[in-house]
Length: 254
Length: 209
Image (tube, one colour):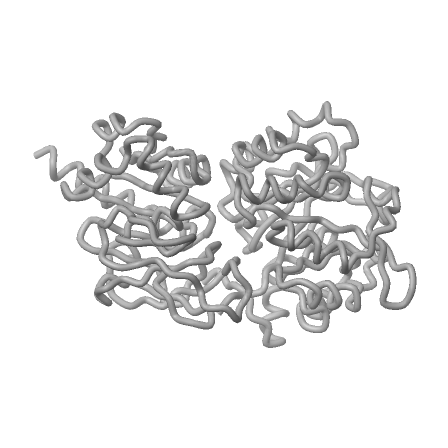
């Protein structure tokens, strides 16, 4: 049967992996390609690179990261951050990425989801949603790296992206991101139930128990984590062993 | 030398890099004439069956690829490249495939999430050179909404379970196909590509004598 996925996320700034708290206070965490190859060898199921560099001058640096990653990493990987046009998407896929993630540009130009799905297939179009809680059971979509509120309801937007041809949703709780107190399970479950697409839970992981909760109580298909892996608090293998002991189906290497 | 068919579909670079990683030379073939310089072929592909066949037809690939496979040279289809090995695809109406394997390509029944995307295990059905050294229940990375139904069950080398049991690896004589992406299925996918690469080298050595 299909296994649940563990996805390390690498936030990339000027070609280096960084990690911040609540989208600010960046710390250096290493070379993206080296880390990616390490995660592949440890049994990560997939990888996500998010280019958090604000300027588009940096695009060439990111294409180079993608190209070098494709030479060394033999699991699927996704690129997100600052992709605005079909040509941007094509360049990343050509450089060796398997999927691309759209966030701000998807909200501003929803037709890009449709166009991307038509040109390259739904399987490679991930829509990233940054969500902030506004009331019990209500969340608002934010863009521009969490700086701009859109007035859009998260559950409605998720359903809309599915209708447009998105293949997967990467759901980040901005309230939890960097806090290490666990995924926002109510949000994750609500989105998982609102769409029939795979949902990747993100934001807030501090322990292995949080990963398990995201997959069970949160009903996510995959869990994303950054700092617990980058700073070697846990290895991917430890995480998988923990999940397997709790009866969650995960891919072993053997 | 392994030739990878470039007909505007699929992640060719990943297949090329994965072959390099396991020590085999590969070249991306942009025209059917390039078939003259290779000992084995990999046909990759993502997208829809009809689109892929149209691209193969308009690029003049269909006949040369079929002849290449019928001559006994090693041939591996990956994902959609495996599906078009069959006679008929039912994606958006009925479309003729390459017809190198007997059977049809059909859609998953409704119920589960489609596409079937992620890591799933394979169940070995028959011993084969392509799957040598790969344990039963090894994980591979899949992305697809349709699956192949060979007429002859003996063409199914391994299967997988996604609500229904479907063929994950098919093959007959020198024509093989993998529904998953071996180039994205570290570590066992690389083992499968190693097995294919060795077979191509063996075939090249034999045919040069």
